Length: 216
Image (cartoon, rainbow, N blue to C red; front, side):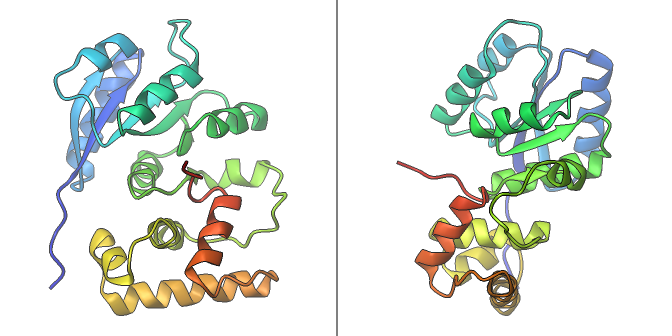
């Protein structure tokens, strides 16, 4: 039996208190693998909260505090926190800028909460997440194949150096299932003309396609 993982420690920041309360409550009760350890309406309260740093921060892009989002993302990255942004804006230029600044996910506030939970899981695993609608609106210059959310998680973990056994443990699946995901990923890339048969090639492709971030 695969050992169970501890829940993802999540902080939620949104200055719309009704949304903050409703979203935090759903994540507490509807996503058993997530644990909301902090739910605050401002950036300063996040940094001052005793539960900070969390594993993932779900951060409102539109906080009215005049602090550049690039500075917030840099601060969170330095603290070892992965960030998913949520916003009322869905313009491709805004999304690209946010992802380029270091966000691992971008969610429009009108999306179902299930997609928000999925973005948090993928970010915690080191992958990137956009809703299907947002991904479709962005110009795909890489010609990358369409991967499922779980395939992106597997590619992110494996590309970041995990063994197949480590990927299986992180995702709570069997080693055979992890191998099956890797095989499907490689087949999809092969159809698109990309050889990711080695771990090094797969990592390079994952970086190019924004599934994992280039590290120094």
